[in-house]
Length: 173
Image 1 (cartoon, rainbow, N blue to C red):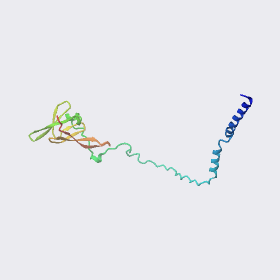
Image 2: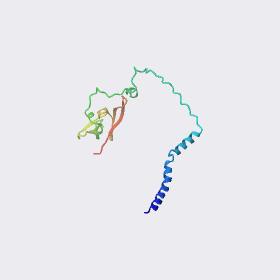
Image 3: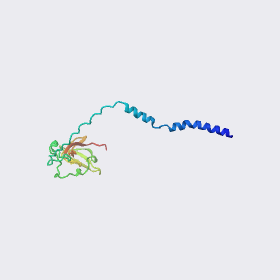
Image 4: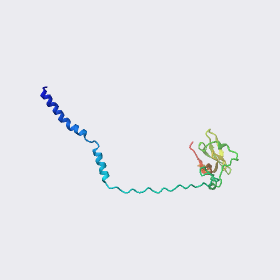
């Protein structure tokens, strides 16, 4: 490369770099400053006042001697004070959950109709109306060829008890 061509090459490079250098020296925040000036030139608006803050008024709790609203009370009024009889002697079939017992038939001797109930161990027991079975104070209410009607006394979840209809249906052997 000759001296003249090297000088010409340097000049070409310089002419290419001049616009880049001029642009780089320009203010990079010029657009932002222009936007700020336009925002300042707009007319201002009215700001709504803050709502009035009312002072706190304390109230004295006067029910300290009453039952706490956070503990369940007894639900005696809904069920007439219904409760299981804890003094009653327990019958043999009351040790089994009701869903583990099954009705396998009926038996009539004279004027008395018996329901035949099988336990999980395969033994069959006779029950009459008034007998108790199941673990929820179940009392036999009715016996017919298809089922044994039972009424259980179960907790209502509010400290009281309710009666619930249950039963044993004749099962397929």
